[in-house]
Image (cartoon, rainbow, N blue to C red; front, side, top):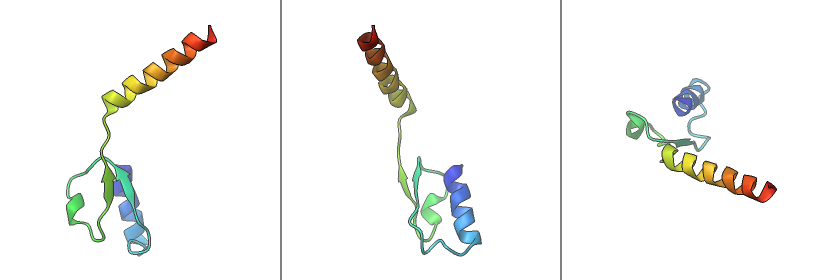
Length: 63
């Protein structure tokens, strides 16, 4: 949703050809935009596991 808002703002101010936009996760009709928007896929479950693992490691070190 944030990427779509950014695209709209760039178009509103006629800056879509001056700013390269990168967003997280694909969104419907992204392939129809000109210029194209680069999107980065993410795995929320994996991100949560990695974050939890990092927190637990820090807790183990602190005790």
